[in-house]
Amino acid sequence: MITVRRIADRNFMGHKDIDVSLPDRGVVAITGSNGSGKSTLIEAVSACLWGRLLRGTKWLPEEEASVRIEASDMGIWRRRRGRIRELVWNNVWPPWPEFPKSPHATETKAQEALNGVIGPFEQWRRSSVFSSSDLATFTRATDAERKRLIETMIGVGVFDNALASCRRDLVVAGGNLAGFQAELAHMTAEFEGWEKQANFIAEGLGVEPPEVVREVFRAKDKDTEETRVEIQDLHREDAALEQKLVLAHKRSEAAKLAYHDAVSLDVCDRCGQALSDSARETLLETATAQIAAEELEIKSAQSERKALKDSLAELSYRYTVLRKEAAKLRQQQQDRAAWESRRQLVEGQRGEVSEQLSKLGNELVDLEDAVDAAAADLEELKAVERVLGLQGVRAHIVARTLSGIEQVANLWVARLFPGVSVELRPDTELKSGKVAEKISLIVDGVGHGDGYDGCSGGERRRLDVALLLALGEVQAGVVGGSYSTIFADEIFDALDYAGREAATRVLEEISQERCVVVISHVPEFVEGLDAAQRLHFEGGAVVEL
Image 1 (tube, rainbow, N blue to C red):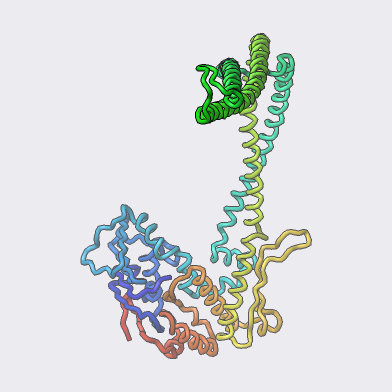
Image 2 (cartoon, rainbow, N blue to C red):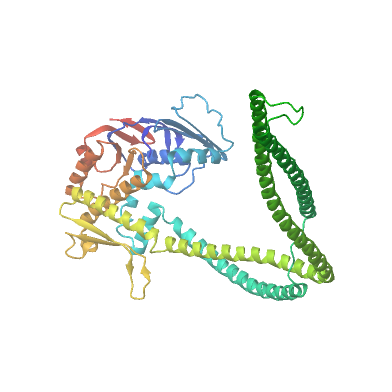
C-alpha cells in the first residue's frame, strides 16, 4: 500500500511546475475548472510509480517531462523525453539537481524492481483511485461480468490459464499412459516367452550343485589328518601310562613284601643278625612310606589314563565325523564337475536367452516406472483439475471474498443510505449439474421491490459509491499493508444533497486514518468538507487556498 506524501512534476500533461505536499491524514479538497489539471495530479502518481496513465493513453512527451513522488518512505523520480525513458528510486526524497544514474540497465528493469516494493498497478488503481467513470462498473455489470470483475480483483483469474493448461496436460498425460500401458503389455508377453525358453534350458541342465571351495576342502582334509595324528599320539601316551602302572604295581608289591618281612622276621635276611626293635621300626616306616608313595603313583596314573581315554573317545568321534564330511565334499566336487560339464553344453543357448531376458527385464522395469509415473501424473492432474475447477478452491475463495465484500458493502451502504442493504449471490448449480458462473446483486429496502433497477438516479449514485468504496477496501485488504492515500475523482458530484451530506460524514471518518484527496466540481460539497488542505487548479498551476 502506498502513502503519497509529495507530488512534484514538470511539463507533465499540462502541468507547468507543480509541487504539492499531502498530509498523512485528513481531507485534501481540490477544485478547478475542466481541463485545469486536477485529475492530472493523480495521473502524475500513476505515471511516476508505474510509467502508465489511468486513462489508458501513452505518456510519450516530445519535450523533457519529469515526475517525482515521495511515497511510503521512499523517493521515486521518472523522466521521459521522446524515446528516452529513465527511472530512479531510493529510500529518500530525490533532492538531486540533475537526474542521477540509475543502478538498473533500463527503465523496464528498474520498474520490475520497483514493482517488488510497491506492488502491481491494478491493485493500487482498484484500492486507492475512485473516479466517476468507475462508479457503475460493478452495479450495472451483468452477473457474469460482475463475477469476472471480482475474480480479477482478488487474483483468481490466474486459475483460468492454469486450468486450461492443466486440461491440456491431462490429454497428453492420458495419451502417454495409454501408450506406455500398450507397450508394457507387448513387452511383458515377449519377456514371458523368453522366460519359458530359459526354464526349458534350466530343466535340462538340472539342479545346480553347491560349489566346493578348494580352501574349505583342504582345510577339512587337514583337520582330518591332524585329528588322526592326535589319536595316534594319545594311543602312545596310553601305552606309556599302562607301562607306568605295571611298574608302580610291582614296586608296591615289593614294598608290601618288605613290610611283611619286617613284621615276621627276627633276623636280618641280609646280614643274618638279630633285628633290634629300633631297626625293625625303621624297616617298617620305610616300607610303609614306600607303599603309600606307590599307591599315590598308581592313583595318579589311573586318573591320567581315564582322562586320556575320554579325550581319545572324543577325538575318535570327531575323526569319524570329519571323514564323513570330507567324503561328502569329495562327492560334491564330483557332482559339481559333472554339472559343469553339462553346463558347458548348453551355455551358448543359455547365454543368448539370459542376455535377452536381462535386456527385457531392465526395459520392463523402466517401462513399469514410466507407467507408474504417468498414472501418478494423471491422478495428480485430475486432482489439480478438481482444485482449479469451478467447485474447487477457486469457488471457495470467491465465496469467502463475496461474504467479505457483502459485509463491507453493507457497512458503507448503512453510512450513505440508511435502511438499505445489499446481498451478493454467487454461482448457482443448474439442473444439468453444470454451474452458472455469475454473481447477482440483490438490493433490499429501496427500489420498490425491483432492487437497483427500481432506484432513482440519486439512489443509484449512493449505491454506486458505497459499492465502489467497499470494493476498494476489499482490494486493499487483499494487498495488505498500511493505509494508502485515497484519490476520489468527482465520484461524489452526482449525489443528491442528502447523499453528499452522508458522503461528507464518511470522508471525515475515513480521513481519521489516511489522507483522502477529493476532486469535485460542486462548491457546496467542497465547502462542507472539514478539509486539512484546499488546492485550486487553474491553467496547469496550483494555488493553496
